[in-house]
Length: 155
Length: 127
Length: 339
Image 1 (tube, rainbow over the protein chains, first blue to last red):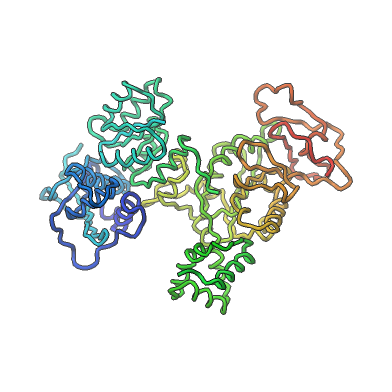
Image 2: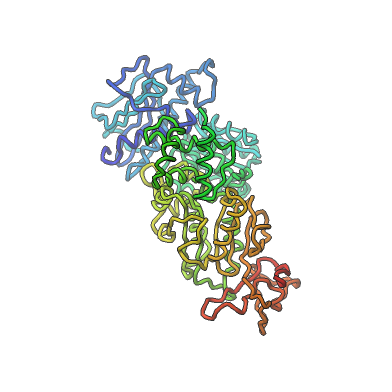
């Protein structure tokens, strides 16, 4: 997996998603500079991939950032309230788009699951972090992770 | 023009519906393939279906095949709007009967360009 | 932070001289936006200072870079749609011989920018001519940077999503990383060459079709005439010129005849007639309409005297040159006899 999907490609995918669907232009999603970010009030969205290679694409951020991402995606104004359901759906869809595009880089593909959202990523003991790409969206931390999950149930 | 947006994500439904409405479409929504078929059984006057691939209950590929099987619906244009980005998946969807394929993420301009290709909006003169 | 007038005048004059492109007052923002990256690269925070520096030194490479930065066109696959449909439905059928044969087809995509137009032409032709036709597409541009990109044939998702049908994408492209690349079989058909439209093309002539879209609009009248003259000289008699929807040869050059096809700006090179008058062919010239697969309507004769056909092969076409068996796209209007 790590041989197939490069950190740079994960970055390209993330930037593409943000410039196309969130910001409307490039330049608001940058690499995180400095020590790995510590997330306050974390929220994580992920999709699983089952196939010759099984794993997970996850998107971690802070809850206030997740609210802002949801507003941007849904075209809401800055003072509009984002419901929990909207937040889970919006951030989940972002993870879904990351997952689909990461899957396309794998030589043998696989089947994408439906997105899930929680405060913490539930991981099995054999999970291996392949990539953790720390980013800054409008200055706020956001991490894209690619996990290998060897014992994820086969479809 | 009428469109049915089929996606399990309410976020994505809202984004796609918003773009279509700005192009003058009347838009209805469904959360998965089975719900979309129920809508069509009720009233099939749609010019366009925008269909996500991965959905619960009935996925987008099954929906495309089901719509294609019904001769009454042969004039409905179907466009996949999905995060499934492999070339082989595009081939599968087109073979099943989809007319166009738009990979997420996309900009409003890209969706509009697809509508132009499908002849559903007029071609914008670039001068 | 706008451009000072003397800088704008200098740049406008430079682009006029080098590329024949007119930059009217009010385009300062364009100059500033396009030159900003060059200025930055040269270590100047402002475009003004960069241009003044350039003006003193006039290093050819820098001047070329400025001209290129200001002449890059916007483009997309199958831009405007109609010309490519007309290529399939009217132009190629009209170029076929009486028995439907089309041994070779030479196409020039002028001012091809990043290559979307020549590849769109290649895809269109791949779908409408068989393996018996040898297709050669020459694509030219003034800008070497865009030509390099064009020849590589690599496009981002956003570029492929603009105008390229998914069915074409999967047939003629391969996914490469997060973008797409034109397959080799198609890339091989297109030759990319640097060319300035103000000069006669160095890559020979005898083109059956020339795409010159949204180029003339940038030129003033004398330059338009000059460009059209170069294009005409590079065409076979009866060859087709495709212009942008808002463009015309009318009033510029009488070497062309408008082909009345819906909203497409399609023109045909009128064969040059010797000064002493029309060719006096003794045998009637066969007329086969492109739509002649079905029964002909009574209004159109199967044969007609050459005088009725402005595009009939003129007597001065030398032997050995493949006969441009030219059939009008619609019943031919009578004109040209007295020129």
